[in-house]
Structure formats: structure tokens, C-alpha cells
Length: 435
Image 1 (cartoon, rainbow, N blue to C red):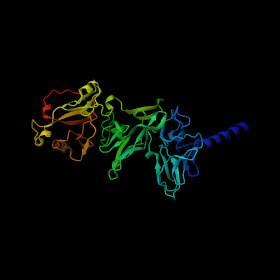
Image 2: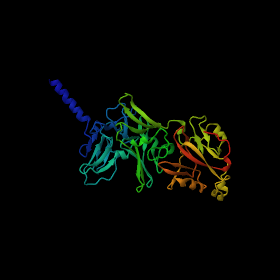
Image 3: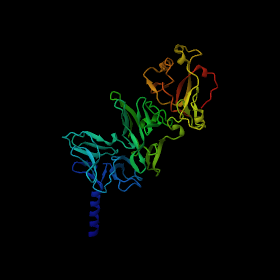
Image 4: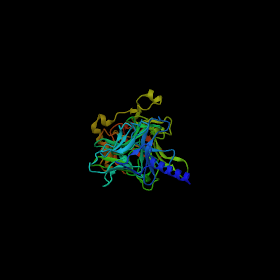
């Protein structure tokens, strides 16, 4: 019986060396051969090496426990990997902050927050994947990974924007599938009307359209049931807006992440189908989803060829570029508005004055302004302001007007909103070309 008892002892010793509790304290750091596990065994935190990446590069991250291929959902030291082969550890420093130290005791990453000197700090990995630094006595929270996401939005997490301080909480893609350093794509919010954006190198790449209190109206697949998964809210006094993912009645593995190639995906672990990670929804999906593909005053219709056309009353800015399939230069107005030449004309509504053309089933364009006025006053406001190029009345939002370029306009086969476009009176009575 000596051999089995010795084997059991060695296995217990190995288990002790390679695992840890669900928390880190000042006297109990996390070493490279240890793993922190949430209380319910849903998530793990530890050191990892990306697939096919340099053996000398290691990162501290969080992943789902027991799911393969492993999905890393948060990385601490994205810009400073551990390059020493041993002795790195995650500890709580004398100032109460979490610190990732390499073999030379140099700090690669830190929470870098103010922690009261009389507190007793500990770090805990929760069952929702949130890693918190908190006071072990009072429970006061000093820092949490949910406020500093990487490329993944877990259930209960949020992205947001403070339009007073201009600070963003956003997702940033990996540089590649094997390199967790910050990539070219970011996902975040713009303020009222609230929209979700993907940016590529800080330029708009895709957008969701405005939130109408139940859905993003620029995503035609989304209906009002989306409020069971998403909540958009904020604090206007603080200048904050956020998109929060609701964990109630959802699969524990549901998450949203931005791929290195710039695709925003909603995924879950398909346990019943045995398919591993399955995609519920993703964007962009088609050529019309890319931001501004048809340029200013152009409209995109994926069922047509070519997909881009100018709005009624507009012509290509460059016929040569347009014929080549380069539509990003967009279109320009064919006939000058009467209100631009005779300000008094806006007072009249008979023939011979500027009028509005109704476009239906539209993904409304970007760069709108919200007016806090009754819906039935929206048209009157636009009529009386020559700078108003278009308006829309959206249920759940109200009056939206456009005084800048009409950009990122898309036609939907069904659903969508009505946009009223201001045109010169000379455009009415012409043959209408539909898109």
C-alpha cells in the first residue's frame, strides 16, 4: 500500500502548488504555476501563453473554466508581457494595489488606484468573471476588471462614455488571434442619441444606429426582446451613458467580443449542440454595413448592383470615381434649395418652395441632432431652418434632425424608419428612381 499512498500524497501536493483559492491577499500572492478559481468553478485567472506565440511571452488573464478551445476574456498586461521564464507573480503591494511583478520585481501592470491606508485589501475572482480588489473587512470595492475590459463584454459588464470628461470604457481587439496586445479595432458608445460604434484606427467602421429604449434601430435583426439582454442607461448629471449586459435568464457563457479582424460577435458555448463556441449575431455582415460606404448623400442597398446610388436630388461628386465603384466621395445636390437664395420663401408651403421627400425602410444616417420638442413640431422646425437637410420622428426617441451631411444611410428590405429629405421644388415631378 506504500506506492498508492505516496502517489496520493504527490497528487495532493501538485494540486496545492497549481491551484489557489478564489482570492489573493497581501500574504498570499499568485505565482505563475497557480490558478485562481471562482467560488462556483465558472472562471479561472492565471498566467497563459497564446497559441503559437513566443514561449518567452506570458500574460495574466481570465478564462472560462473547463471550456476548450479556451476563450481568454480579460488580459491584465496586454502591452507588457512577462518575458522572464520564472518568478513572476501577482501580489498586493504595500499600497494596497494589485501588482504584476516580473522576475526582476519590476511592475508590468498595476491597478493603480487610491486605497485607504487603514484598509485590508484582497482580490477576488467572482463567478461572473469580474476580478475585484476590495476591502476584506468592509467589502468596499476599490477596483474591478469589469470597469477595464479587454476585448470581451461579459454578462453583468458594461461599456460606456462620459460626455463631460470624454472618458470611454470600450472593448479593444487583440492585435491578432495569438497576440493580446491592443489591436486596430475598438467598440464603444457615442452620446445621445446613444449608438454603438466599431472604430478602426479611431475612424468609424460600423454603427448600430440609435437606441430607442428597446433596441438599436440600425440593426434590422434586433427587436424589442433585446432589452432582456441589453440595457442602455446613464446619469445625465454625471454625463454618463452605458450599455449593460443583463445576466438574468441568460446562458452563463453568453458574451460579446471584438475579433482582431474587426467583427463584433455575440457568442455562447453550445453545450447541447456540441458545436463549441457558436455565434448568435455578428456585425458587420454585408457590404452596406461598413460605415459610409456610399459617401455623403449616398444610400446603400445590398440587393442592388451596384450597391450605391445617390439620393433623389443628388448626383455623383465624381462620375469617374463612381464608375470605378469608389463611392466614398458621395454625392452633391443637383438643384440649389430655394431657401438658400430667398430666405423668405421658407414661410410658404405652396408649389415653388422646398419640400420633403419621404424615404421608408431606412437605417437612419449618422450625425443627427435630437430636439426636445413635441413630435408634431419636428417638421415645422425643419421647414423654418434652411440648414435642416432632413428629419425623422422615431418612436421611443422623438425628433431627430440633420444639419450636417447625410452619411451612412442604408435601405432595409423590411423594418427601418422613415426619413424626410429636404429637396428643391424642382426635384418634384421628376421620374423617381427607386433604390
